[in-house]
View 1 (spheres, helix red, strand yellow):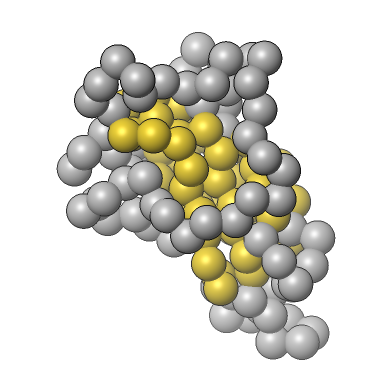
View 2 (spheres, rainbow, N blue to C red; view 1 turned 120 degrees about the vertical axis):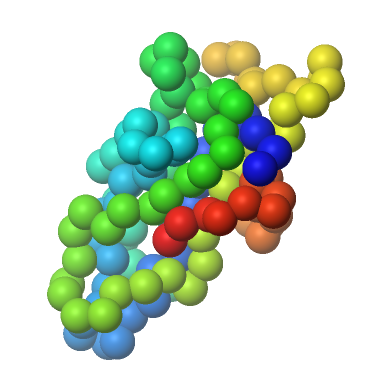
Length: 123
């Protein structure tokens, strides 16, 4: 796997009208370190973003090779995702860096590009 720096994630829950809807999720990297928790999914109409907090308590997790989304709260049933998003940059060059606390990403931007090519991203 190729390591990446992950800054934020998003999750779009599926629903079976009255069941199988995820209401909260957490994100783990590299075998168990929780980097995002309390991530709320308010409805099944769109993806909901959640900021990743890294090893050092700053925005973003560095050198990540595996990302796992864990359902924390749901309406029960056979839960699942319409889509998940993992956003950041590949590790490998001087220009590949996490944004500083003064930088921000465009709110509401949606791309389907995962930053962990050729890895077993767990859902």
